[in-house]
Image (cartoon, rainbow, N blue to C red; front, side, top):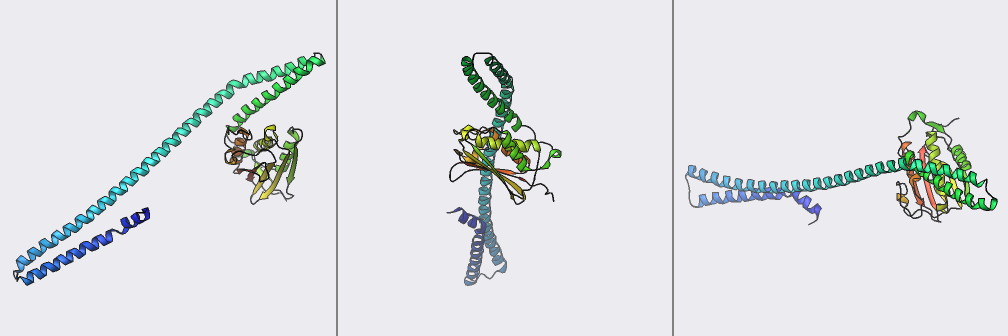
Length: 323
């Protein structure tokens, strides 16, 4: 029987049960009266005593039936409550285990970042010393050294950026006193001009003529824009054209970064820290983008474009317009 039908039986089944008990009681009482009349039992005292006994027996039987039904229903409710409690306990245990695992992983990552920071800085220093030494060598011998030093420098800078991004991703949100009404277009254009663009990649910046300012912390907003651009134009993305657009969206300002690169394997997961994508399109930087947007009361979205490539969009609270 379906659950809805069972619920209806449990809810309304007591009506026919009580009605049946009342009908049986009335029938037995009527039958006893007829028997007494037919056999001529004229003693009123004896007749009343027998009728009381019959009525008591019938009412006891009816009450027993009702009590049995009620206890059965109560037992079913208790069992359902127990099952619900067991499920809640299991869910709580799973959440506690995941929280403990995340806390342990965070502590391990902080320890690793602290331990590798000094060796990375040492590698960066040795790269600069190696480049200076190459300047005193013969040109034919210096070229391979410069090439190796440049590769080592790029690798150490990437490691330094990863360590710094993890530290930034776990910092406390900035004070609300530092929030200002900022021109998002100016910050985006400054970031595009300052960010080294790989050869063959074109960046197009478009902004609505009536674009409203955003209410944000300056440093965190610059960081958000920087990681959005880096995700689109870094070599793993494989992009050739990046389009950055800014428009008003209700009481929010919409910042969208679209590219024609490899896209995302799983757009719904790219904002997770250390998202394991084989395309390397997602990293800790996008997790920081999400956190910055949330700090400011905004939201983030990721999707793959129909014609190929990725689309990242961030909506941030609108500041006060200046007349």
